[in-house]
Image: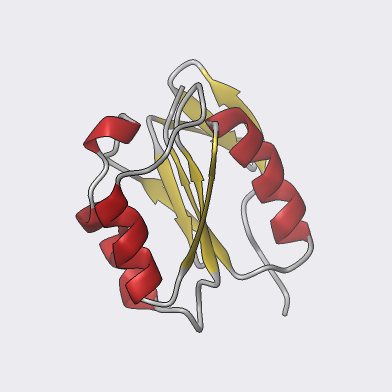
Length: 119
């Protein structure tokens, strides 16, 4: 499957440089399109924050790569259960690691969404 996923060139300072363009705040990359994501912290994360991912479904999104912020932490149970019920996996790690992992996985052509909380 050919991919045109944006690369994460840099992160920090409250945003991300994706394929050369600066994006202020958190980002959601879904179907190779980066868009602003209103989430600012792991503690405020809700299932509604993944509505677009769930709507896309497991044929489009194998799993969500979630960058949870500056340090790793467990996403809320409701988020984990909602994604599981939709047949979509969840991998979570600190945002720095998630940004680097995203680039590797998209280079492999994996079907994933990246939900990255800005640091």
